[in-house]
Image 1 (cartoon, each protein chain N blue to C red):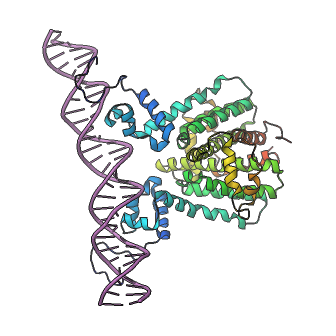
Image 2 (image 1 turned 135 degrees about the horizontal axis):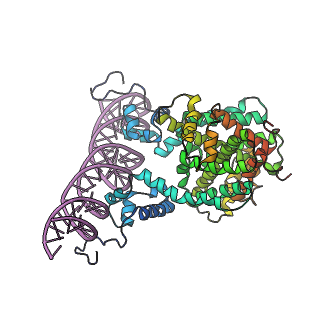
Image 3 (image 1 turned 90 degrees about the vertical axis):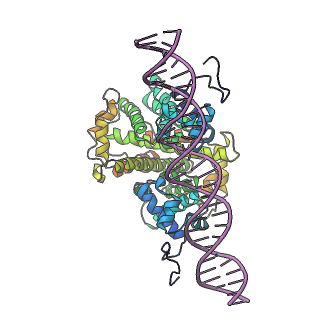
Length: 227
Length: 227
DNA sequence: CGCCACAGTGGAACGCCGTTCCAGTCAAGC
DNA sequence: GCTTGACTGGAACGGCGTTCCACTGTGGCG
């Protein structure tokens, strides 16, 4: 390793490893989405050939799973924080929401059953602690999981669209959507068109939390929302 | 067209048309999912070449959008039926749920903003009719949309997994999941493991409707659920 | 100390994909 | 009957995931 006998491609400084591959894959995914992750692009960025990557990773699917894992596992550490069950559920939800906003490519991956199960477990535990009656626990937990994953995915899609067009700042996020809505035909879209003017002050993170609260209210863990 | 001068590839009986292309695309998608839709497979099934398809359809993306359209537009006809707003919302939700169960490839497509807007409009109108106070309408409508799309997508993923393994019947659906859950480590997954035994009689369609009702309760359109 | 075995590498090659290109075909209009 | 132009279908292109394999460098063994 000290001196290179042949002057061909510069030899990598650090050895190839599964961790380095996954980390680089995340960089590519964050930069250009799922289509940005290519074994050739990965190999170029790691100064190696595509074949070498296959020594550490079985295929692209495993690579995507590992990358999602790296983003998602920290979320499970919500267990550490100390708060009431409803507050913990909100925190779990927000963590997923923020992770998917920052890494929109996670969306399709997180729907995989294994992660669904992890979230169901995490939220179900909180519902038990909160004293939700046993027969209602499963419905409540799986509804929360579905909403959290659904709302986060859809926000991520919108975030990608936002990034593709010019709009930048977080505060403009719903504003841009509102603009599009305001231009819709009022006869065909009376509700959306009317509401477009009223959501200027909204933030989609708050919007998401309001949805969680709506569910917690229905479950009986909260009083009536904003009466 | 009456007689074929050359005996090469059998000439198509019906002329190529955008509708025929889209209909065949749906067949392929239903049979093998998104990866089953290929311009080559499509051309073979239509007894033509790949190039001819591009005369009627700009690219694969437009084809997928058109196919989704064909599946989704009938859902919007819920406007016709006559029922109370909560019942109509349940019907809309179930239509989406069933459509995605039958055609799991729709999932990623339905998250596109245009479909989100259509559903928001449909459900927002019902909330207005039901007398939900104006400031709460947007949150309520978008939460319902997120849940309906999220829960339907996740069910579709599970349905695909189910189809990939051996399990067939609808009634076995949650049963198979319960089996997998029952085998999980009770120390790591206390909630999921415990609940696995209790959901034998559940049906995921009913489960979905229970989630909708939970939300309607939180919105204030329903009494307390099963007190 | 020399050799060997083998984990690890990287580039060439394969078969598929979406898409483009273009030489043909054929019915309708002059 | 000729011309035109909408329409066809097969060849070809670049890029993808994946496989294959000749090669390298190093640690352990004789």
